[in-house]
Length: 566
Image (cartoon, rainbow, N blue to C red):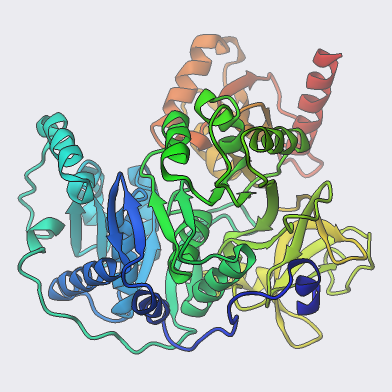
């Protein structure tokens, strides 16, 4: 995909896409200087201008420096979408450190893996989650843990209400290595000097399954994050007049890069939503009047079942974008009809991306819908289709593996050179190409189409689920002999998790045993990774080399569902 193809459908891009040298913080600081009085973020109705946000970042940087954080250190940010998580992210970058984002509802076992892999000397989390880290402290390299209250950046009335409700849950950590973030607010007043870092220096670690389905740390540089933010801003023509709802969580590349970072680099406003409920989001859409609505298919499906949304004014909406999962045509058409009925002209667009390239790297233009297409690559991103297992480019219309080259492509997988080499490959043109493990094709106009995933990964509610991880946990149950997990269609989640289980003693199969195993898994994995149902089988089908044949199970499930609907 050449740059001219972008201009053909989008016209001139509004900003320079030349990625500047230096850090992400350097570019954000330009935004602060150019839009000092514009609102940068809105958190539960409490707003901060760019100038105020800049001072808050400086304060965080000073606190972290006083605690011993130095250039090159890693801080795990184990937070929901909130000002503290965002401010810590940019403060760590200002200090020349690395921010590793972790889901705050991760289990102790998952936290142990993530914090050790990085490795993190520092971490930030909410006071309601800190005990999990205390339990594993002796097994991880963590030296200092910052804790904060979610209410710290709420408006006064909401803060008071929250603190009264949560009073019985207040904690009094007596450990010297646990530091309350708010206690440093008044004592740290000096401005810390910005570290000089190369644009190719590591800045962020996000977690992805890569090509094998085992969660790995995706290493993203300053250049990766900056270029992605600039490209998203160019695609959406974002400016100071725009507002984005940050519905997607910041520990997800989609939420961090598109809903927050791209908005802030363009001088727009991001509305931070710490916890998703469809009723609240529908209300916020009417209250905040966002110009951009970014989400996964599950979100848009939920909104179309919510009266506040389907009967509310939508004339302010410029663009709606769905990613992280396949968008069904019926869902798109229903959304578009609802917007038109309520005074808007926006249409729901689909795109494509992956954590290994920060997030979205292509999308459909607003006025060029092509069924099944994931659109055109963003400026500066090259995409090609190669014959599977080779570097040979496929002709138009021929299916092959989607490969990506450009400034958003990751540095590699953390401490995993084997998986990095299997994913990042130098082609005959001398360039490094990211092999996505996804199959697709390209039409004669340069539009790309996604067909299916080569790698065995499931998207549930837009989040990655790694079958091998889920199967390993199920098999830890004393009654389970073998387990296999697949994704099946679901009207709400788009895809939900179903497990096929072979018990040591088949006579134990029962609804009670199904509940027992599901409850067992829920203690160890995040909820969207847990099976919603279990089918017991006397014998799971095996491949010729003795592995459980998940493709056979998928075929059986598909046939069963098809037969049922006839």
